[in-house]
Image (cartoon, rainbow, N blue to C red):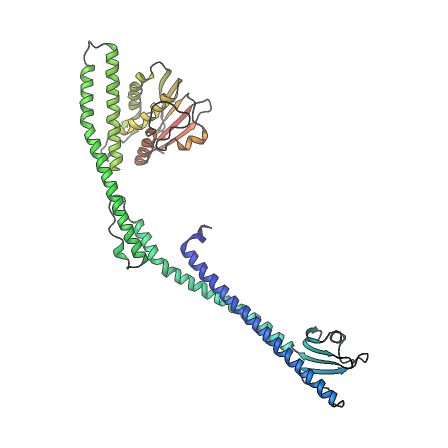
Length: 424
């Protein structure tokens, strides 16, 4: 079905259908006209001959029956059969008939008066043979014209679709980072050229819009770094004071944690905006286990009155070449989601085999919604609490940028399992 929907296939099919139908109609009309004209000509000739012969016979009873090579005439009377006339023909009524006998095909003109029965028989066996040959010839002609139509359709489709194929090929070669170099200049001022001009204009508008958004996001990310650095420095100075009350220290610690998360998110978003990984061959590998320990330490104050335990299980060392902030944002979103939606029990982070597992004892996610959790602004049905639903969408984009993979599934014992693979 997909092949039939292609424009080139439609052109070929249209030519083939048109040629086949047109040649078939021509063949059928030829046979119809040939048959009708032959029947009308032979029938009218036989009827006229028979009528003329009877008129002459009534004037001259001694007139001999006509005889020709392909036409035979017989005269008899009712009740006095002429044995030269077969019973099959003798039983026919007045008129012109087509009869098939053991000897072949015949046209029989019959005239039955009260005193005379007259028969005029015309041998059309040769006509029938020629008609059969004509049918075979017309069928072959239809096939030949259909093949010619198919060949013409293939040639025409290639000619018609070549500019469109060229346009599609040039579109596929365009990069995402650079504006269109101009497609219209490669095509004449026809329909395809107009389409190329429209695509050029559209590509220019899209490129301007993307560049404007990238510049804005990059500027915002850069501008946020300064106030976040000030907040971080101020909180570090405050936390260094030894005479702070515990409640005040906890609140400052929350501010420091929020500033650190904001800095990491800003850095990660800046990499996404630039579509660059921010690493090279000389970049250092970061220990995922150490980053997870820091994240768990930062999330512990958020537990409040929850009866929830945070665990880290390190099976083996996992090191990833990527900015530490990107790893922190990716893993931190998974941990914070598990903490947010798990009222009691535990959240376990297992590190090893080139991946990290974040498992919780929460309610899990309905199977019908598992494929939607990475969508922007999706928070699931019946989910309460704060959140914009953008965290996992950012995680997915970071995974696509760095070639990581993420998978969610419900645990058999209850809760959700998130698997983040850095390798393999």
